[in-house]
Length: 159
Image (cartoon, rainbow, N blue to C red; front, side):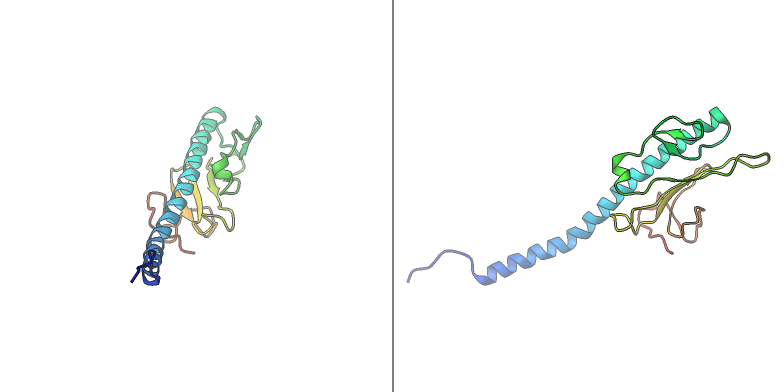
């Protein structure tokens, strides 16, 4: 009797099952890795902006109202990196109007683009007090009951 070479249906089904299990285990881990990488790029951009805000404050004695690609008197001159611009909307600045008796402060937030890789990750924010958090309530203020500090990569912001 002559034996034909090749794979049996059972062998192919077992191989497919093993591959499916490996994909089911690896895919969520890969997706979380990608989210952390995008979040890290956004955080680095915000830290750079905060540092430039402090330098602007030293020069002008008030915080800048935003960023611009060309030199202006009330904005920081810089552009958003392509990696950040692809995943996040333009940074939102909260700076009080300069007036007598008003304490200069700033809050800068990056909101993810809807439907993007980090759309459920919450907004990244930082302020002049050095607080850094992720939020979902869009109030631009740190709330320890809802918001997550940047240092905690495992938390999920709660609405």
